[in-house]
Length: 71
Image (cartoon, rainbow, N blue to C red):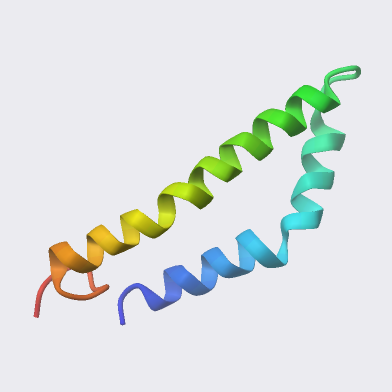
């Protein structure tokens, strides 16, 4: 039950705000560097997308659940 609020937050931020996040990165980039800024941001995002499931699986295996501590 400990991980549920984290999952809700990650789902809201990672899925629900993806479009506005991309727009923010593009608008925040220096002039002429929008493509590089978006490319770097998208690459970092994809690294997290690839690493999150195995890390959650490791957390489950290491703790016996998704809680931060064993019961």
